[in-house]
Amino acid sequence: MTVLVTGGAGYIGSHMALELVDANERLVILDDLSTGFRRAVPQGVELVVGDFGDAALVTELIERHGVDEIIHFAAKIIVPESVANPLLYYHNNTAKARELLATAVSSGVKRFIFSSTAAVYGDVRANPVTEETPLNPVSPYGRSKLMVEWMLEDVSRAHDFNYVALRYFNVAGADPKGRGGQSTPNATHLIKVAAQAALGLREKLQVFGVDYPTPDGSCVRDYIQVTDLARAHMDALRFLRGGGKSLVCNCGYERGFSVLEVVETVKRVSGVDFRVEISERRAGDPAAIVAANGRIRSVLGWTPRHDDLEQIVRQALDWERRLAAQATLP
Image (cartoon, rainbow, N blue to C red; front, side):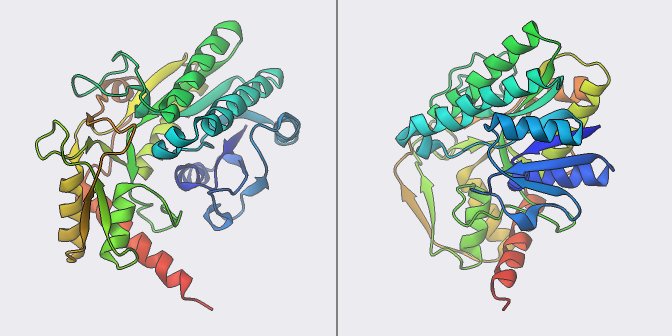
């Protein structure tokens, strides 16, 4: 059996590739390198540079490698960008996913794992949110992902095809062994940006809004460590291989931290009192969203190993130091 990992040179996809390699799984990565990096691909794993919406290419990869499962990470993920350019997101995240699903079905691939998002919930009235919480995305990014969930549901009813859609909350941290981390220079992930500010790689950190209906006025999020998230995909893969039926699960720790709490944690762990600038709210940002994770624990047997904000921050800081050192090499 071979697993096709789309977006496997990106942040989360490359950590998934590491988990697959550690488990002695066969895999091939498809990535257009628009945000991913060749160096993020584990040694010995084939990287094919191309578009996951290219049906001919995906068909060839499935046939040549004997692909039985697809884990689909490739997507655009920046909420403000999706608000400014919604058609880009509907094209890349939704229309191309339709082509990927059509190719999977026509090629006989019967198991599929999809990177969804907590953004499908939108502004929620109560936390933590369960998988039954009404879906009301407030950004084109969240809507583009929800449309793929709908397609997966319909495809699974029409064909011999099962999927797991994992709704990620805020992903952070790096591989505990130092093999990978968030490498995109202009990434918008809070913990990465704060780590860069602490190390002097950014002149300041912007906090977007402190007038939300939360204890300190800043947005509250559930931060999940990236290796724990990759392991959730491994649990989903085992579930589907064991005959599990289509499923949607939240991926989070059932505990939230505000933006200001995260900033103070990064300052404390780094020992640097970096500059913080308060800015206006961004369009598409819910006030607070925290995952209920009972389903993923009970059905997939997922157990977090890195549920510690300070540990996550240390990983992010260590990874930024590693990237900075690499940048200075001749």
